[in-house]
Image (tube, rainbow, N blue to C red; front, side, top):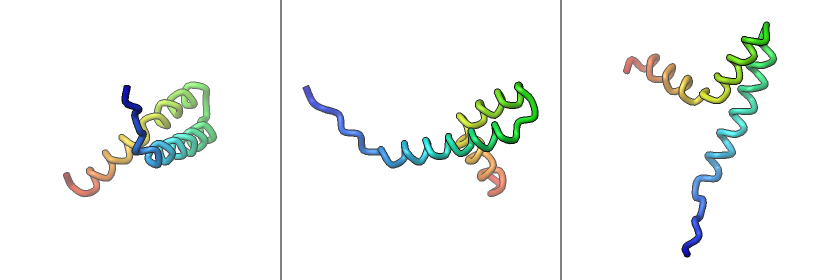
Length: 60
């Protein structure tokens, strides 16, 4: 059986650090429990928000 080699470990660590940073940011700025839950959702999907805003600003 062939062993799988993980080739994109650096991108996983960048996403993980970004997730932790976004989680801390959104939770610390939450004004209520529900905004904290929304912050957790945003922290999980922050790359999608980033790409969406970048494409919107580029006019695509």
